[in-house]
Length: 159
Image (tube, rainbow, N blue to C red; front, side):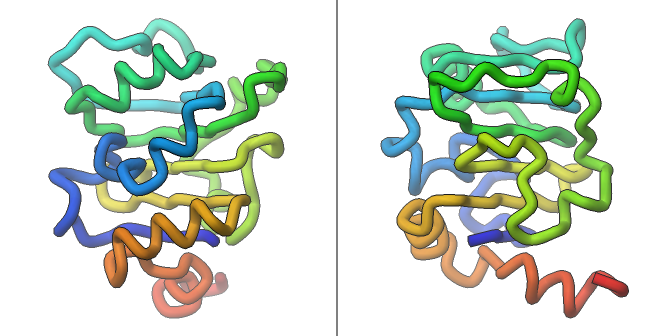
């Protein structure tokens, strides 16, 4: 239930949230979103900026980011249940550059049901705790969604 997208046949650019979340978006309306360690390109006003290390967004706020044409270059995006109060001291220390992001089934924010990690505009890691959401994602992206564990064995030495 861990995927990596390297090809961009179905998406305009890596970590375009509107495209990456397209197959599962309708199932995620009851979640809050944590966005941290980010670098992005956007020409629109957004509920995130470079003044803070992280943001906790409700669904309407995140939907603005989802609907925008924003490219997440680096960053960690997590969907957590609405009733979760995130540990902000932990979130502010997370990094998409940490090698632990490549570990299958390892979630940087333990309460996440979905985690997206943008890595230098070249890789998008997507991890699910819900098999149904993972299956919908894989069905939509087909061969473009590569199993993270298989990718690690083939391309990452020591993984």
